Structure formats: C-alpha cells, structure tokens
Length: 318
Ligand SMILES: Cc1cc2nc3c(=O)[nH]c(=O)nc-3n(C[C@H](O)[C@H](O)[C@H](O)COP(=O)(O)OP(=O)(O)OC[C@H]3O[C@@H](n4cnc5c(N)ncnc54)[C@H](O)[C@@H]3O)c2cc1C
Image 1 (cartoon, rainbow, N blue to C red):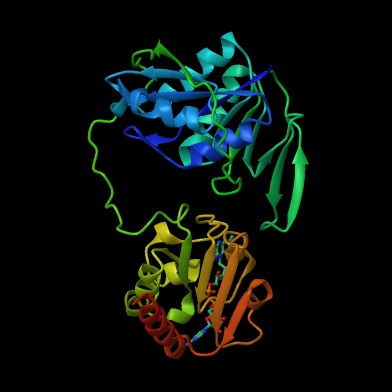
Image 2: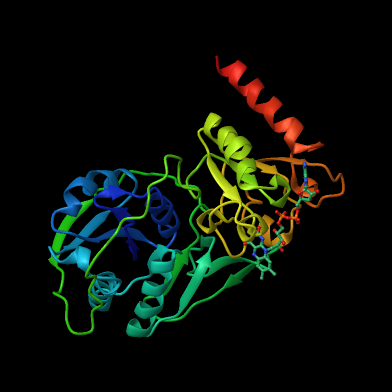
C-alpha cells in the first residue's frame, strides 16, 4: 500500500487537534506515517494518541537542541525520510507549515499545494478561492507532493492504527540553522484558541469601542465557553487585538456557533467564517450582507439585544 507522511503539530508533547485532521486527510493518499519532530522524548507522550487517531507508523526525530532551532529540524527530517522512501507529505497550513512545505518541495523537486481544504486519492487537492466562493481542483507533480491543509477544513475521523514507533536521529544544527537565543512566550488567553473554539463571538465596527468588547463580546463568549473574534475594521480601530482578526487576512474559523455583533458581512470577513455550522447575526441594518449567510438574523441595536441575550443565557444556565 502507498504511504503518506504527516508532520505532527504539537507543543511540548501536547498534541494539537489539527493533527487528527491532517491524518484524516492524508489517509486518502495511503497508510499514514506521523512524523514527530521535537525535544528528546517528545514522542513518548504522543505515540499512543497518534495510533488512536490513525497513524500506522510514528517516526520520531528528536534532539535536546530542538527548542532553540526554527523550521530546519522539520525540513531536514521530512526531507531525509521522504528522500529515502518517497511519498506525499501533509502539513498544517500555518505560517511555519507553509514555510516548511515550500522548502521541502524545493529539496524534493516536487510540487506544493498550499492552503488546500481536501486531498483526493489521485493526489489532486481542493482549494477554496475568491473568498471561499469557488472550489477548484489542482494537480501536483513529483514523487513527494507537499500539501498544506487549512486547519478546520477537514473533520477529523479517527480510525485507530498500529502506530509502530521508530526513532531516528535529528541532525544537529549547522551554520545554515537559525538559532533562537532568547524566547518570551506570548500571553496565554483563558479562552479557547479561535481556530479550535466550538463557539466564536465576533465584534465589528458596530461594537464601537474597547469597552464594547469587554462589556458585551467577551462576556457572551465566556458564557458559551467560546473565543472572541473581530473584524479588520474593529482591529484597525484598536477595539481588539490583531491576533483575533477573522477573515481573508486573519484567522479562518469553523465553529459550531458563530455570533456576529455589529458586523456588516464584507466578503473579506465572511471568507474566514462562513463554514460555521450556525451563524447568528445582530445588526441594525436589515440590508447588511451578513444576513445573507446567517441562520438566525436579528435586526436591532446590539447594545440593547446583547445584554438581554447574556441575561437569558445566564438564567438558563442556572
Ligand atoms: C485586501 C483586504 C483584506 C481584508 N481582510 C479582512 C479580514 O481578514 N477580515 C475582515 O473582517 N475584514 C477584512 N477586510 C475589510 C473588509 O473589507 C471590511 O471593511 C470589514 O470586514 C468591515 O468590518 P465591519 O463589519 O466591522 O465594519 P462595517 O462594514 O463598518 O460594519 C459595521 C456594521 O455594524 C452595524 N452596526 C453599527 N452600529 C450597530 C448597533 N448599535 N447595533 C447593531 N449593528 C450595528 C452596521 O449596520 C454595519 O453593518 C479586508 C479588506 C481588504 C481590502
């Protein structure tokens, strides 16, 4: 049977849920080998989970110096493995994943398809383009085609597999490596990450101020155990941080529930959230474009409606 490689997304030995999506998508291409690149011993906490979500084999390339290196450990490892035993490679379409994919494709003389939403058995892949209004299918050449898969686009379908572990040496850093000399972790939010949240409450320019976010958007998100998002205009107005921007030039989210407060529904925003399962919009303009994709639309003043909604949810929770 043909094989496919998946680069495992993990932080300090904790598996990122996107890995299950990568394995599900890669299964169309063949038996999946999950590749763990990290600090010495990382695979010991991950191997069982990787088998449970469908890795037929796990290859771990680990080194004590991993934390002080960027990108090249993953590129070197996947290059070595795929050079010796060619097969398609699937990584997450993150900033790092896209860079790894580009470098790998050059080294392996294969094509790369970025930000795909599905991978097909014939090695073609599906893109969603023009603000997610059109789907296209693209083919890619080479014996080790590289795909970056958009997080949240594929529903994880874990089918347990053998997960046979093999540990290989991670080459030590050379003069080509970027070495991290100091590291300050970013502040960890109490709320779930936007890309993983089951519920997202997003505010737009209509929220009107920083206080609009802290008094209305955040409390509603917290009641739903959800994440907070924002439009670019809300970010540009400095109502909320740029890390929370949703849309073409921000995050793409696919939650079960998306609540849009004071958001007009510009295509650059909706391209990042229109795959949400249920969309609720509150906007005082009945012609706002967001209502075209909303499952439930409320025409009215968000400053009147949101506090009532918060109160109602609180009462039902008690
Ligand atoms: C290249 C490019 C990339 C872009 N990328 C992104 C992106 O990634 N993400 C993104 O979001 N945008 C992006 N944009 C910007 C996008 O085009 C829109 O300008 C933006 O999404 C609009 O944000 P908004 O809905 O908050 O603001 P507006 O369009 O100004 O809408 C505000 C809405 O709030 C409503 N409102 C006002 N007051 C109230 C109230 N009291 N109660 C209820 N409703 C009220 C209004 O009726 C209005 O519909 C991009 C633009 C370009 C050109």
